[in-house]
Image (cartoon, rainbow, N blue to C red; front, side, top):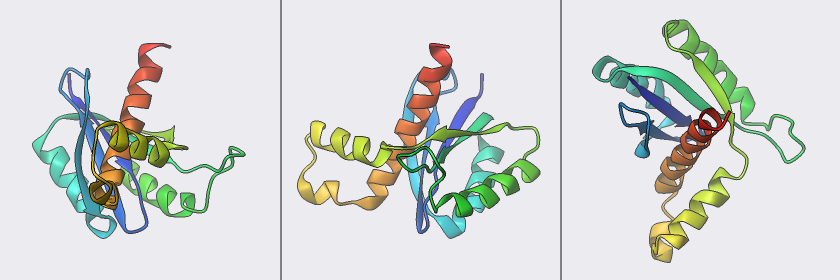
Length: 139
């Protein structure tokens, strides 16, 4: 099996997470500057076998797309053109930042470490990926 790559797209930084090759465990991968995201993804896919890419879909509480969707959608469309052999899917990302902060608190991270926005983005990507994996496992 190949990995699943998860992207928590942000205006400045983007968190990434990935499964193990058996798609059992979601792990944080890294956080990259959004301006370097496309190059990072292409490089990663050239090094690792990736079966699917899941991207957090920014939504408001009402379920409507949030303002960030106007940045995410062009990126996803570009990925689909560059990588037509790899499906790219959206996953609702509501509450991922809140869940990431909760995971950091529960994990015993100090307040200073919890203020690391890059770490929050990476954990959010991991939560998006785990959510996707859970939805497929129980459907």
